[in-house]
Length: 91
Image (tube, rainbow, N blue to C red; front, side, top):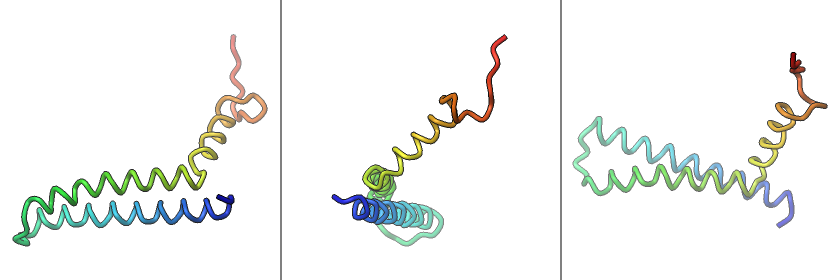
């Protein structure tokens, strides 16, 4: 995939995963607060949807390249001598 398309596709997956997590969490919480009269199977299935949404979000972050960029800048900020803000002096 080209870089721009993979970035857009990754963002779409991240949005879909976030929406799935919020919808699943809202359904689980509302079914415990209010008695909808729905089966426990649907509540358990929506709780599983929370983990599936998190997985989709992580796949989107991996495809969109957000994990690698963040890791690179974290490594540069903390361990590369040229970019380290705090100069650690060893006595």
